[in-house]
Image (cartoon, rainbow, N blue to C red; front, side, top):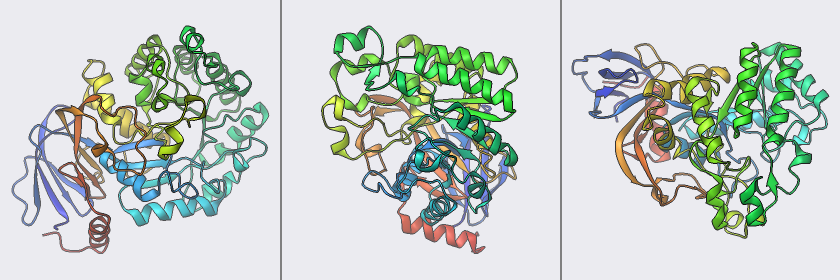
Amino acid sequence: MSESFLIRGATLPTGERADILLDGGRIAEVGTVADAAGATVVDADGLVALPGLVDLHTHLREPGYEQSETVLTGTQAAAAGGFTAVFAMANTFPVADTAGVVEQELSLGEAAGYATVQPIGAVTVGLKGERLAELGAMAASRAHVRVFSDDGFCVFDPLLMRRALEYVKAFDGVIAQHAQEPRLTQGAQMNEGALSGELGLAGWPAVAEESIIARDVLLAEHVGSRLHVCHVSTAGSVEVIRWAKARGIDVTAEVTPHHLLLTEDLIAGYDPRYKVNPPLRRQEDVEALRAALADGTIDIVATDHAPHPVEAKESEWDAAANGMVGLESALSVVQQAMVDSGLMGWADVARVLSATPARIGRLSGHGEPVAAGSAAELTLVDPSATAPFGVDRLAGRSVNSPYLGRTLPGRVVATFHRGVPTLLDGTVRPADEVAAASARLADGGARG
């Protein structure tokens, strides 16, 4: 297959129509492009061309939990969802708390070829919250780690959190906090409120999230460091972050697709597909999160893609694992919650799902505009497609999606990573084809 592609008649995030020529791993031309000899032509009439999506919060599970996901299958899921880069969380086995483990993850991503895998380093050794991990060594490693998180666990000790914020300043790092006061959430099973009482499930109060965010933005201000808040889920958290930004504190925040669309009411059926941490909240929280994403208080959408084997989710509610897969469905959910509702346009989608997450994670070569000279990281989406979301849309190893059977808008038609199509005509390309095409491009092979 040729390594150059002429994308005909795509709609750019700005609303303009243009042809896009990809050649040699770069966007060579955008506008009215004459026929390029030897280029494979992709008909993009009716398709929106977005810069390749970037997920700042993905659980790839490898090493250690390959029964749930591997770097290969996770990046295939990323390609299916239009993502060309994912930040891999540190809760693997062994934990990604050393330079050796993050470099292993980086190498696995390079070998897979479907998306850039940027490791996230643990804040504390073993995610135990007792002493700082090798932050400097991970930053100086080949993985160039800039994001550190104990996601799944809160860095609860304020002195340890302060020290982490101080330490990462030296190399422009950021601490991504899982905001959960552990003593307020012991045994918690769902959002605390009237419904949790009716269902007899222990509640997860909003203040358990909001109090940690309030503490941490003050710590970030005190030491002059960058703080990122993972999976914001409550209206109160939005107000704390809005206050912090108005004060000039260097804080960014993310919201997951499921917190933009789903509510605690779904838990009434005790279906473990809807069990997640932080839990699904009230409709009022969903509306506040949507408004905050639209006005920039919340900076990005991140999937918190959390694959689990079937036995971990198909059990009684109390015993089921927290988490949902989200890479393959994220763009459709954002379209439904934000674009089709009129709250955002496609240029905003490019900002919250590509440009800003790449900037927060200091990831070069991603999040660039669809323009001549940019890296050939591109996603083509058909916004007019509407169909029930089924297991055929899931390209990863696990199927714990909360959207199965739900009709969602939009469909990713093609994903280009480093100029190589990893998804074409809605189908993830075989691994050997992706590897071969990437090798030809790296070797400067014929491009017509």
